[in-house]
Image (tube, rainbow, N blue to C red):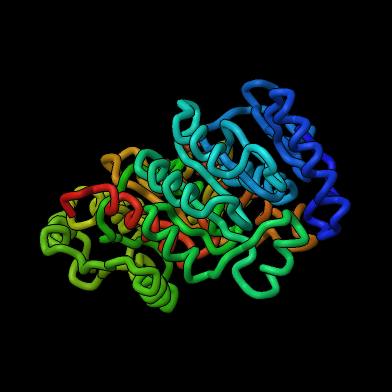
Length: 384
């Protein structure tokens, strides 16, 4: 592993010549080379890491990243979403092993269930397409592309000595290969959390619970904007609500605004439980609130976040219906780290992670991640 930078990415002839000599020396002596201009390998199960503050627990997400610092940032941000890694490769200038080699490896690695790729430019476009196509046929491959614009392309050449190619060609290649495109590091994390935690969802009919008034209207708009189908409540569900004595059985809709209830019997958890019984919904999205302060739920003390989530949202009664949670990032701002809201939000994050429920800061991000997940599994099903 060659960490050192200042080779061909500088554009200087003498640096490129030195890189060539090192590469040839390695080949002549049977040495396989990672880098240069890279941070190497993070392999928690083998106790290998290129930063001492990385999580020691292994997971099932693998990553190959042309950028070392972006690989580090991804690992650090991912741990706040409950994402743990099998292997991460920072490969830099890729004078020997390149993105295709890592993709081929991760595609057959039994420890890896989801593959992330950050790439600025490819050494061999045809091989990359074929490798992506084969990998995406067996595992989700999520790609974040650097250097899409003119300025980004210039930065790419000085970062890892790569040619970025046109954005249109890249988009077509990703789409035809069956991989999943992410537009930002934030979306890369949204998609990693989704594919890590959710089963294969092959249709886009969503039931949305939570929010009130204008928030419900906006939730419907954002789900449709993302490409989801916000289906009307089936008549059978309304009949069930009427039988249970829910007076607003004919008033509730999808998204379900439970703020219009006239008593505490109509909860988000009850509506979610009833929705989960119907095949009209392929998955559910719910808004998640706080706990009223650390260790407190509505005046009760001693209830953990997991217990609160199970009780409030009837998680044990959802009949394995896939669930995404929207947990706004209020309380995570500057100078709020010691507030009750911040501590409560942290507890809720931990509770959702322990329960295996992916969460997102906004409805639009949750809906977009769900739609891309559905699109991926639809492509894998030849009968659709």
